[in-house]
Image (cartoon, rainbow, N blue to C red):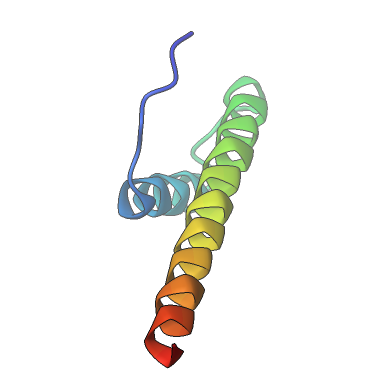
Length: 66
C-alpha cells in the first residue's frame, strides 16, 4: 500500500474527525480498531513533521546568531 503524503493540517483534521466519531459512539467494534490504528499513524506523521520543523527553526535561529 502506497503512503500518500499528507499535510499536518490534513492529519489533524482526520484525527479530530475520528475522535469525534469515537466520542459520539458512531463506530462499531470492527471499525474502532481500524480507526485507532489510523490515528496512531497520523500522530506519528504529525510528530515527525513537528520535530522536523523544530529542527529547521533551530537551525535558522543558529544561523542568525552567526
